[in-house]
Image (cartoon, rainbow, N blue to C red):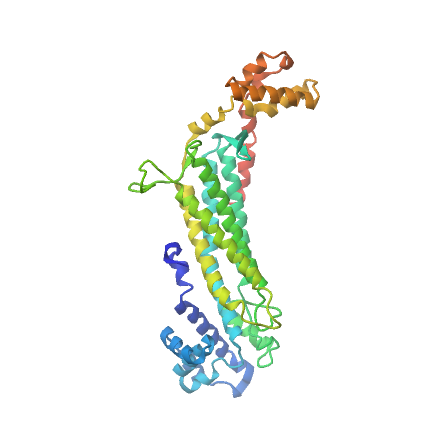
Length: 430
């Protein structure tokens, strides 16, 4: 991922240095457990001490790879050479994927911690803004058209619980993807044993794949990338709402706009929703990467490497990008400006037509058939909208609506009476 969209903590987990550090961690752990596999024929205590001190440089590995044309083989050569004669025990009984997939599990586990924490922080930020805006009336829109009144708190509560689901989904997805395997060339433990694998993985603190081939099955990584894409889709839904609410004709919400910021190079009056648009655009990258992850599931027989080159791009990029987008979204949520007065003014744009369902049901309760009541309300609501005459006034002057309690019908509190119950459901977020 380019520096523009990379936060330092996540970026540092995917450097060449960090990647090879995890390879080293796996190789050393595997060597430390060889005495339990080989007994007295295995490495001595002195050799294990030399192996524990083995080191590498990225430059040396890259230089060696120019000869081997195999990055893990080059790494093993460099690491083994640094351990002296004891280096012969490094990579004993292992195949490249044993190291690569188990090291990847370590990287995914490390990446998952700040990402899941960020996802939970976003959910809490949305819940906090929802509670803060309790009772703030606004229009609810369906198909982009005014529907019925709601509250801004209820709007935000829906986004908060979606963010919470994404946090839980990410937690599960990282956990199931962070598994290792040291089962050998085609997964039969021909050079080692299941017990040896368990001991090495226990030393590393990761779970093992129950049945691996030469690789950990890639449905696990596809599930993680799908969870990341879903989290991105949730961010996009939130961003799309903010973008619409910031439109000049609506102007109910605005992104934070700091001193010195410029909205347009040509038009000084502009305050463009660039933060929301960035969330919307980059969510597309996450979805594209999820598709590539699905394509990686089907490999030839016990293994090919068609997935390998793809994962070198999509796993670092997706984790780095989601981490970045989550924190951009948190800043957006915490800093956005809400305009209750504009929301209330927009409620009046249809001159009361958005109370149409209340009138419809009142007419039905008064004895009208539903279709007749619907036609009456549809006619009067359209007149209210077209002529700018309040629907309530039209009803008051229409004998077909005689006897209706207009004070009760045109009461906004009818739409907000369950808001406390809805907001109480945010308790699971904290």
